[in-house]
Image (cartoon, rainbow, N blue to C red; front, side):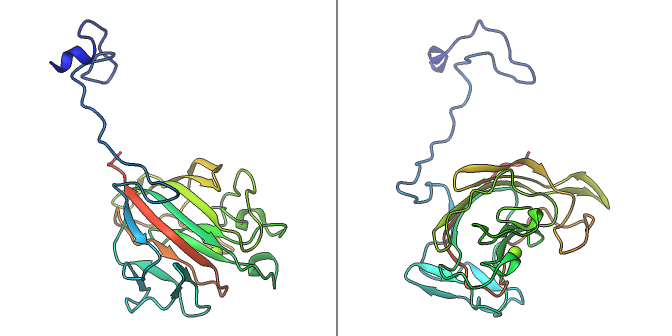
Length: 239
Ligand code: MG
């Protein structure tokens, strides 16, 4: 019966058991997209504005940041926070805002960070009219790759990161697949399938060091009261 959807006399696709327009090919799983910024139906929500129950301090204690009016905010010098859950390859959405009152410049202005697997930082910074080294500006793979463009909104405005993260794979000490990220900042492509050199670092280059295929997502306390909201991810199938 399903055959009626397509054809059974067409060529078989390369590296596939299916023909072109194959009527027996399984349908894509149905996902209901979110309305007005809400997560899609199959997303795992890490922060919905209510509480920090999905998060902890990096020593395993309670997450020390504050939640107010549906937003979480870095409590400067309280420490970075991380998800209780270890995440693998993901699609990630998060929204953040740097302080609206500009007090400092360079790396001192609205600095935070999104650390994938706790090791690989996508820079969060108020990079609007705020020169700093290119591989440390907003949306940079910190210390490795500047974003393709600077898509910053003005200080205080909400901004979005949408990314696809593929973590590294190891065979013993050997890297069999380096980590890779694709990132949209405010809907603008800023990294297209960017391959990471290794873990991100300040003023140095770190080689890959074997680690599990999952790890916590970490948000950085860099001493600035950066805010976050609407954080969710979708786990990607292996490969
Ligand atoms: Mg940072």
